[in-house]
Length: 244
Image (cartoon, rainbow, N blue to C red; front, side):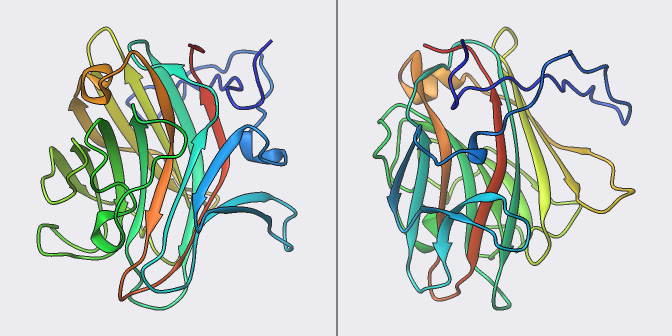
């Protein structure tokens, strides 16, 4: 039986605009429950959004120099293919900093990195990070970009792309797929308005298990603020991955 953390997502979209047929499995996002299968660190907490009743991982809460992380309590096989999807709402003052990242890492469910431009993962050397960065620090191309970062150093981007939609101030959806056979990591985003279409933003070649330093590791999110602040929420998080 799939655990509450590793629930089945069967929405494999093609790299084009058209969607592949969905497999007949219900979607049960991880964040629908009480968060019993999540490990929350720093400023991260589970809360209920009163307007919608949705369960939300709030990584940062609008304060200065905050750091939060949320990890699946169960390991997944990082040397095998996986897919994850989630929605995020990064909001508060303008400009808001600093952003969030999705990580596969080999440290464990208590991992937490640096604040500000460290996006909550600086120093986690055994990791692959996908940034959703909303503040332009000196190494960054702009204040609305995605990046793949290896080795826990957000000052060195393996690949970057300017987001096709605003990452700050409006909710967005993201999907990340990893093909272990070809080591292809693909990141898609879309807005949450009715006519929005998913767009492929990053297509990179990365050996996730190699960089995580472990075959069976942890996945989850980090977020941080610095001198600029924001509320950074993740919800409707679903994972289709082999358990370790």
